[in-house]
Length: 284
Image (cartoon, rainbow, N blue to C red; front, side, top):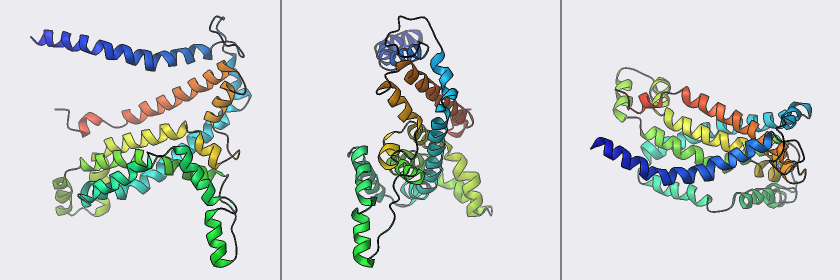
């Protein structure tokens, strides 16, 4: 009977598995194949050539990759610090008010990311909304904070705030209150409870939230182009340029594969550093 159930489960999963293969793996295979084609070609009917990878260091594309990874890491760190208190309140303190906060945060996702970022441009630009109020009150203006590294990180934090908040809240909700109370009864300080109880037991949410924000931030493009202008060129900008204006699909594919491999490797390393099965109680 169990063998029959396994077979039925396998055959039931085949259609969905084929759809996933066609929609997810097939485009990656095409990109991988294009990445080993000679540069400036638009067909896979060529002999393999790894020249597109050789220009990664020769033409300095590694700098844009380092900028993207560095800003994604900074944004993830800032998001963790900002979201932890609010996530803790949503999971342990606010009660039904957490639903109101959830709806308020989710509503922001109904508006296009680009429109929200352009709203910040109109607010912070020289002669924009914010300076208009400052000038009306004080008679003096201020230098626009746009078009620098800091404002790009701010944009990443602003856009990907929900992707850190909700996994953190879910992870914190998994921490038993009895465990925290027992630690307090044994004389643990709040810092010790946070370090030895909350953070380890909420690790699944921390890992998921950090990976989501880091992966999305590393491949983000709108924040650097809209808020940062040309102050910083990230790897996603180089990939877009290679596929469009440069008309160099192999180069764009090679840069894409490098980004995918690095992000995938870092993600696997982060997941392996935390024993999710043990933390979530699935090991006996």
